[in-house]
Image (tube, rainbow, N blue to C red):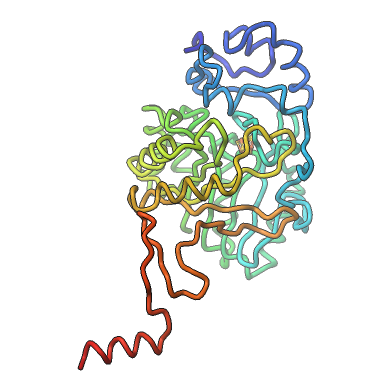
Amino acid sequence: MSATARKTLRTPTDIIDAQLVGRDRLTTLEQVAARYAVAITPALADLIDPSDPHDPMARQFVPDARELHMEPGESHDPIGDEAHSPVEGIVHRYPDRVLLKLVNACAVYCRFCFRREMVGPGRGGLAPAALDQAFAYIAGHPEIWEVILTGGDPLVLSARRLKEVVTRLAAIAHVKVIRVHTRVPVAAPERVTAALARALRTSKATFVVLHANHPRELTAKVRAACARLIDAGIPMLAQSVLLRGVNDDAATLGALLRALVECRIKPYYLHHADLAPGTAHLRTTIAEGQALMRALHGRYSGLCQPTYVLDIPGGHGKSAIGPNYLSADGAVIEDYRGRRHAYAATASAAEKNTAVSNS
Ligand code: SF4
């Protein structure tokens, strides 16, 4: 493991001084850092094994020369946030919910980030006037049932600021659910204090969705941080990104999903990696992702099963991308061992079956 890092590593020199990579990579790291934000917290630096050239933690957080190569189809806004942003800080893509992007900073900068062109230190967050405008938008749209706090990472804000935001949201009668998307419990578990957990509680249903991609991320400190939230009455879900060389094998992915459930965190989405610039080396194919989902199906508890989704480029929203176990005509269903079974799919056939069994 690395020499224990005491502070967040924010420059190539910091990363080299922490002995996470050799000094021979300084120039490359500087080129990548000039393009995309870099930060590796002490908690994550301690998980990186510099002796392993394929270390799954390093792949997620240490800059890589391949990030400088943009592939055809990659986009600076791969999930089309901009096309659905009626006012600054709001993304209104689906009828009943909005994203509220409070801040553009994160505790750690993931090398595969789908908002990598928008996040970084010094990019600030919503100014007070813009925040007022965002709240006015939510208040003026009674169809908004759920507000998702995202960014960046909203949990880099102080407990006091978060309390102000969730209290204002909870005061809007038609907002019934508040969801917080975060990587902070993994990246900086010490930030998840009892005070932060109390700050997030409101009169409305509030969920925290943890972003975690590898079972090694769920250290004892991370598990304790999540337990503080859950014990404070905040249910937790998890989303993971399918990443080549990180979690693209059934044993690793299964171990992650089980570890999450053991922490009382329900795996929610497995994201196919978005077409963010410079991330091709971390993307799998969809066929590979579907094969992984098949490998998990039936062999791991239903509690461990996320929905495998693709955010359709251009801002068209997420769709589940299988695999599909039912034939197109509904007449054949496949079990988890791959065996096929005839199924009487139509209502009339079901009635016929009932009639037969009653006779
Ligand atoms: S924490 Fe989320 S928003 Fe921040 S860099 Fe990682 S993936 Fe991107």
